[in-house]
Length: 230
Image (cartoon, rainbow, N blue to C red; front, side, top):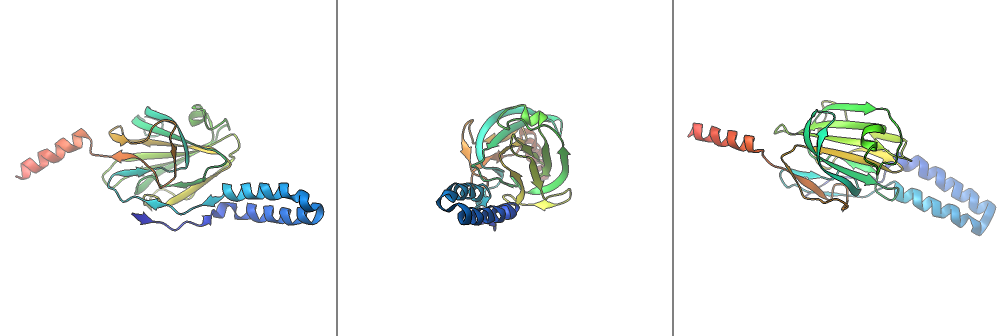
């Protein structure tokens, strides 16, 4: 197991929390006990921007969850970015989820996309196609291609991504944040083996989505190479 350092409270929310605390102090001064409603809202702000420590697996080929939430779509799908067959896993993050996004598998960032769009409820399938989104293409050292897509939701109007083409990334590395409810779509190679189920709740970094094993063609090629060397 390997561990990354996480900020406990996401830096993306520090200004929001300071503003909320200031409102709480003012409300207490002006309204006394009635300010308890304001402080309850402050607690909600704090829980939204929490960014707890994660323990990342070191198992070979493991793909960790890039987001915390509920799996709302799972199965074969066309990869709209790399134009090929893939396995798609969609994770819906409610306002009560941790909204820090993590790199699902280590490799190199090959390309990034940013697409404007609408703000439908991120739990709906059409949000993958119509909503504002930001995607990254990760290529592993073995040449497997993975695309991770941050999707804005009904309340999420701000997608943050901190990686760029050419960056080298590690499994579980913190790379982005989405404010106030949203969705993450993950496109894996068709030979990946999923270990999650529809409706399951996953925790970013802590849960494994699946494993990318060798394809049958790769296994055959490796076996042929070994035979040739022999």
